[in-house]
Image: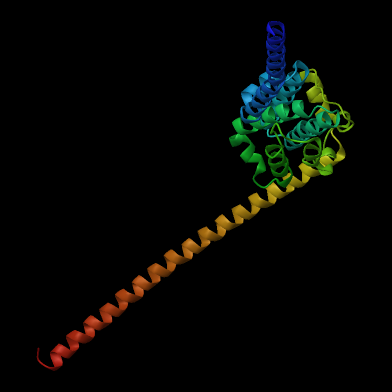
Length: 252
């Protein structure tokens, strides 16, 4: 009896040990999900967790974009924004969805930090406005699926990307390479930049015409006010003279 009882205790201990061991992977999986969720919400954390190759790409392209914004170069801004967004799609198509979401968080953070400069370009420039809006809406959640991520980047965006990026590249290793991508931008970028410049010129012309018309209206208004004042003075003078004449007639 003692031997049977002792064996039963050993069996129970083994069972408990097995159960405890089975719960550990689930705990680990939950922790992993928690980390991924925090990545989607914290761009700084996302940047720190990207691989070095992706970090370098982000640094080189955002530096190029900064220079293009300062130079007020429509073509360079359009080209770089298109390259930034297309790389997201390329990462996803390579099966690197998690890396893509971290990458998207990093470039969204950059756009947010340079909102004021970008506003100058998005006003009256539909192409840049669409690119900025599209990047701002790239999925970054840990739950993002490959299908959702692929749908986020349209063919129109890819058509604006430089040949190497449009062909699937996800790396821009140097600042020189980032600059070369603009030199090798497709004709669609030049067309979009030209259209934007034409639209901006038309807007400026319309604004100048509107201002001139406003000035003319203000001048007319002032002239009319003076005419009315003069007419009123003349009428007052006539009325005063008539009043005096009546006073003489009636002996007042």
